[in-house]
Image 1 (tube, rainbow, N blue to C red):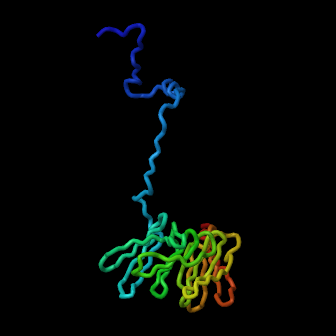
Image 2 (cartoon, one colour; image 1 turned 90 degrees about the vertical axis):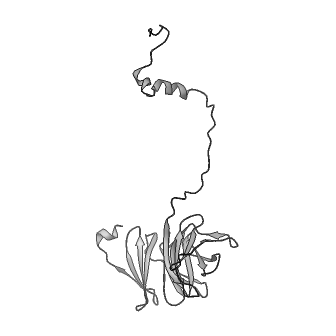
Length: 232
């Protein structure tokens, strides 16, 4: 082949390899924007479906059921017959009340009824066999973080953002707010109820504390923790 004409430049070794010349990039950036960007809404990721809480209970016929809350907008409640593996899905949304949950952190069963609470802080109930959940009442705090069975007909729960502890009466739907359990903290992450002593044990965050509270008197006692534990 002949040599290149004097008016043309031979391609550089970089261009032959597919490399980008920084001068060309700068020239392209100076060109008017002739292509409109196209944005396509792909919807919620279906490959990420975290289960935030699960509990087991029985329906009226005595069948053992597994209840699992899958995070979403709204949360999807999955009810699975443990023996037959049959499954139904119910959104945690009460369209009549205009209420829904996007995250469930508290689940407990009382007298055959499932109770759910989370974000935003509101109580829902589900009776096995129904096709929908029912909104019951708003709860203290911005988010309910944990829930446990207390005395008969009483559910005990903790919340974020004021570190509030409270009780919910499943018979009267009344809420009893104990207020801030540990001043200076925002989260009541966990709790446990001691029926024998009628005492609630609260676990706080972001700094870890354990507070024992007598339900009758409301008196609180801080239980010392190892320094490394209290940092979390």
